[in-house]
Length: 205
Image (cartoon, rainbow, N blue to C red):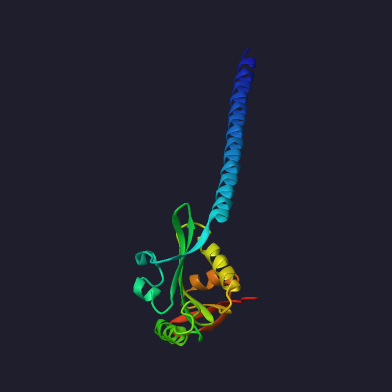
């Protein structure tokens, strides 16, 4: 009997360990299933929003949300043919990109202002809606994952269809984040300036 009791205890301990392993295995499987379900839902939500989103021109934007150039007011952003575009989905704006239209590539906000005024005044008598040959994106921000990439794609398509714009260039802050964003989305680096950098999305018509 002395030898028998330790064997029973050992079997009981082994049984408890096996039960714990089974529960642990079931728990892990449940976590995997939940994770797979969440991934599928996230993918569906993303594609739903990409398919349902549209590019629209805005009369104004909330400049306090602009992480790049919050000092530029809505008057600046809409004067001399400049425009504000947004990606709209379910009555909400999820990404914003602001443009000036020029005939030269600016290296600063001051040059952006001057060059867009020159381009506007050249065309104001002919067609004020067809200003400049270069669309210069000087700020962009997103409030929803994938919004930045989507607005770049939609703006590119818009400029490709344009009959007077033939270049899409940025006036970006001199940050590594801006550089990575534009290179990741297909732009090429044009030049690095004292306080800014320019990238170009090649427009093939």
